[in-house]
Image (cartoon, rainbow, N blue to C red; front, side):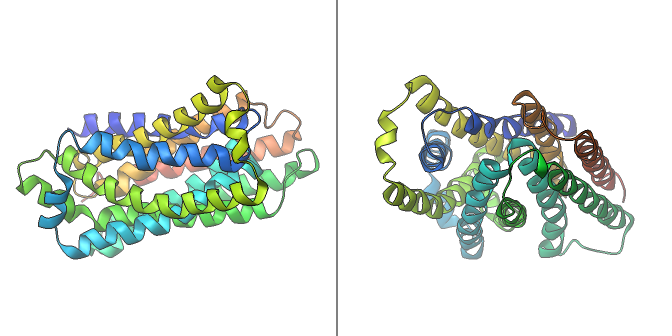
Length: 327
C-alpha cells in the first residue's frame, strides 16, 4: 500500500514539474491567453469528467459535514490567488527558479500546517524530525533565491517576480491545508459506497472549481485591458491550443494522482505525500529549466548556489519523509 502511494506521488510530481514548461515555448499568446486555457482545462473541464462517471457529487456533498464542504470551497478559492501568482512568477523568473522557490515554501508550510489544524501536532519524535525538515526547506529556499539574485546581472528579472513566488508558495500551501480540512467529504463518499479515490475526487471538484473563479476573472480582466482575446486565433494551433491544453492535463493529472496517493501513505498522508510529490516536481522543473536554457548565461557562482539549493531541498524532503517512520 505505501509503495503504491509513493508511486502515485512520484507520478504526481513528474506531471507537476512538467506542466509549466510549455509556458516558455507557446508562441504569439500573452500570459492571460495561456493561463485561461490552462485553468479552464485543469479546473473547470477535467474534474467533472473524472468525477461524474463514477459518482453523484451532489449526494456526497449533501452527506458530508457542512464545515468540510465550506473548507474545500473557501481554501480552494484562496488557493486560486496563489495559482495566479505562480503563473506570474514562472513568467517573470522562469521555470527553474520559480518552481524552486514556490515548491520549497509550499512543502514546508503544507507539511506542518495540516498537523496543526488536525490536532496531530504533539511533542513526539516524528514531529521534531518534521520541523527539522522544515528548517532545511527554508535554507534551501534561501539558497535558490540567492542564486536568482546573483544571476540578475546576466538574466533580466524583476523584483516583483520574487514577491509573486513567495506569495504563491504561501498560498499554494493553503491548497494542502484545505484538502486536509475537507477529508470528511471523502469519508462521506465512502459511507455511500464509493472508493476512497472517487470520494477524494469530489474534494477536487469543489476546490478546483472554487479556485478557478479568481483565475478566470483575472484572465478576463487582462484580455480586456490588453485586447489580447484576438490572439486565440493567432499562431499554430498545435503549439498554442495544444500546449495550453497539455498544461491543464498535466497539472490536473498531478492533483488527481496526489489524491490517490495520500490515503495509501498512512495517518499523516497529506504531510508526506505533499512534499514527496513536490520534490519530484522540483527535480523535473529544474531539468526543464536547464533544457530551456534558463541558466545558460548565468555566472558559475549563481549556478552553484542553485545546485546547492536544490540538493538542500531534496535533503529536506528526505528528512520530512523519515518523520513518518517514527512513532
